[in-house]
Image 1 (tube, rainbow, N blue to C red):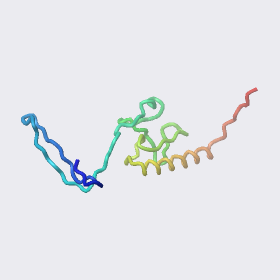
Image 2 (cartoon, rainbow, N blue to C red):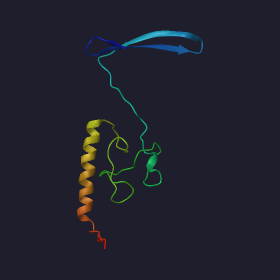
Image 3 (tube, rainbow, N blue to C red):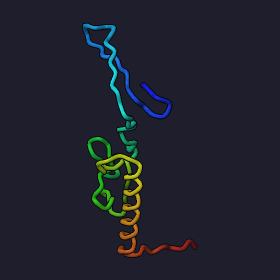
Image 4 (spheres, helix red, strand yellow):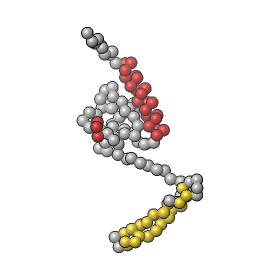
Length: 115
């Protein structure tokens, strides 16, 4: 990586082919970079409980509702198309509002007192 003390200005890399063991050095000049990490969601523990996409993302509708009524999800582990913190925060707010709406429209659950 090339930096000027404040930002990334370029990327140096080596191209290797089957015929070229040493490889060829290349450089790309850049204005900056976007770092992306963690493409596979950590949802293994949900298998069999709610619907997951083939990539392991939690399937949600436009309101954050999962395949199980009353269970909502948000963030990078869901099928939301863009995985960035600001989007995950908005999705969390939407799922919380949807969960609240679900609760106020549901029949109350009777709580039994211990004797």
